[in-house]
Image 1 (cartoon, helix red, strand yellow):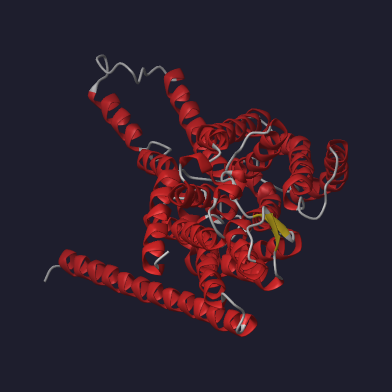
Image 2 (cartoon, one colour; image 1 turned 90 degrees about the vertical axis):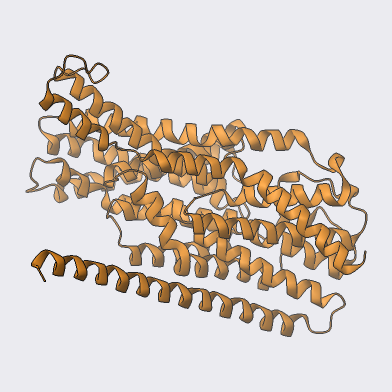
Length: 493
């Protein structure tokens, strides 16, 4: 047997071994997730006891835990994926930071009151009876969780909010007809499919272009970094302070617009004063290279991953527990309420479920967002994180419904396409017209073909992710309506 054949066989054996290990790890993770859901069943059974309607609450608690797991598996990747892709954080470090801050955000700032009908898209008065409402909420929760599970398996980061909205719409139509849906609200949600990624892409690309022009393209990059990095880090801290004031702490603190601006300006000023000497010290002895300048953004990236995770936990835990809380309230009170209190045990199901889903199944989507769409370094990842916070703040003030998932992924595409644009412009400046190949010699043709193969944004991810975004609401709605009709048929109502 020749050496080439031996090497080939060894490579095949290694691939088989790796696939076997991955399959074993996947089965173990699924087993641990099932154990978590069994734990929810046992705990909720003990807590609920013989309360009338206990089976509904227990079943909803397990479904809510399943939804929370899928939120952690899919949605959290947007907060930490860029930091992992840029190598600012290892996968293990990112998972631990995100798990802790997601749970903290959910428990500390998740609030004790939520709207039972997500985003006001269904009018409660149209629901015929409490039992119909319970079935509708269970259907919406299960449909959203199943779609998120499928999207995660396919490697598509989608909006958990849109998933639960679609579930509520489908169950609402099945339960009370088309008139029960607030269609203007649904129109605004649909508009966010375009608004969110476009805003995220534009803001991330603008920051990246500024950093390239002001720092990376300068002859003395270190001097430029000492001037601008403290400003950029201060902007990030100021923006995140405003972001947390508006979104991350909105359930426990309601600041005025002037207070939010004041918090942001104070955060900017303090950070600028503190970061200037730190950047000066860190840059001492650095080589005048882009790779060295990138290192100055590592710590800000870690901070952004933690803060984005905290805000996400505070906001999106409601997607798992709001329907569950609504079911608990309806069963115990016997009536459908527009807003309900959240029992502490329900909040813990959402918080722990998100962390469990992230730790067990999060790495797949983290790699998609951080590595597979386009190559990220610390500067590019910093721009994506900053874009996410700025876009949410701007959209909140303008009253535009946006998705944090769409913003973050849009930001990744934005920096990738800017890199492509600048790279193509640089080639043209070197005297080669890449749109006209008629005058190219063989060497230039080979160079062009090689360049074409090195597209900096993978188009297959662009099309597949966009398709997943578009079908999220209608698919979740169809699935939810089908589950609702099956539940009604089985219950005999």
